[in-house]
Length: 447
Ligand SMILES: Cc1cc2nc3c(=O)[nH]c(=O)nc-3n(C[C@H](O)[C@H](O)[C@H](O)COP(=O)(O)OP(=O)(O)OC[C@H]3O[C@@H](n4cnc5c(N)ncnc54)[C@H](O)[C@@H]3O)c2cc1C
Image (cartoon, rainbow, N blue to C red; front, side, top):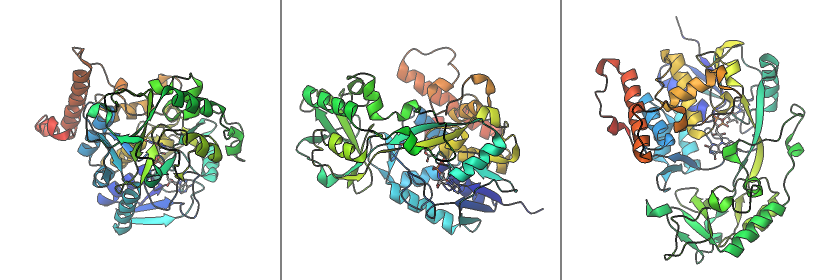
């Protein structure tokens, strides 16, 4: 019997991953994407898999949760991860990509695939035939409203913010220096060093700066939004409100960023946006300040006095579903068991996590993939999405806290993290190849 084509709603990170995986497995895919006809408040192009904020897919090191997740994705056959790696820009141990090149390459793969039909259209209701819902945190209002009708009032919301990008040729390179923290890798980051006076002047300006108000982002469907942030996406001015020193002990900490042996009072890092390095992202400066205020206040950063802003920071509604209440164990919706949910709308947080769940539902559909081992990051993300006993649900991202404790415990932090990663990848490899359990050295799977 001919297989039914799979409707995928949203050609973002999760949708593109799922589409390419399913198509390679021989499934017909109808991939719906509303851009460029209808844009979201954050996307800039009509290309699939556009990264809306940072261009970093986080660490590749084996002793980090993001590095471990990448290693798992490699074992599971991710389609987007190798494309990202082919678009890498220098960023120390992080996998940062040239976002335009990445999106363009994903687009070309999708367009060239004989099994994928890319349909440029807004979906306003779930189709009657099976599919994957991955319209992301910026799901269009009409679709979100129709989802609420079938899912009830269990859909949740939060806001988050994106950081500004400045042009390289507007930076004062006499004041800015290249250096990686503790000189661990290539000096890929640019650093803006603050004196005590400069730092407090910047923080005070952040505290006094004029901001967008929540109601400016409401609309006819969402009038009762609570103005809350996800902790990892806290606007810089909200962090500054926690204390005048919060930033210099957090995202602007100067440790390991000494210049000529002198430790600055605080340091703002700039991460390159593309392979030609003509644009830089202000690390940790996601913001909801008004545009004029961003220009005034971020120009107080040493070296950015004449910064030209290629993109201002902004805030957006960021929707996600109450997954544990709504999902079946195979990540389909209880009221629509023929529809999977993946990506950020499905309750994970982060670029890699969105790609990962796109891959997960594609494999569940194509290969009846069973729940992954508990020692894996992806196995634990999956469990969090379907476990209603975990208390109030917040989007989950890759972190070692998800994993079961090591037996016997290891005290040394680095050794412990490596052991967690090694254990997880061995478990995944054995799960995928039960016939040759532990045959391949796991170290070969680690970056
Ligand atoms: C403003 C913002 C900044 C973020 N910054 C970061 C960051 O720096 N780092 C990080 O790791 N994560 C970040 N995230 C979180 C998350 O990782 C990204 O949003 C990620 O792109 C989510 O992947 P996705 O596939 O779920 O959704 P998306 O990549 O957003 O893809 C969803 C797609 O669905 C389309 N779509 C929406 N509604 C419809 C419809 N009705 N019909 C057809 N198509 C539709 C959209 O146009 C989009 O292309 C950010 C999120 C937001 C909102």
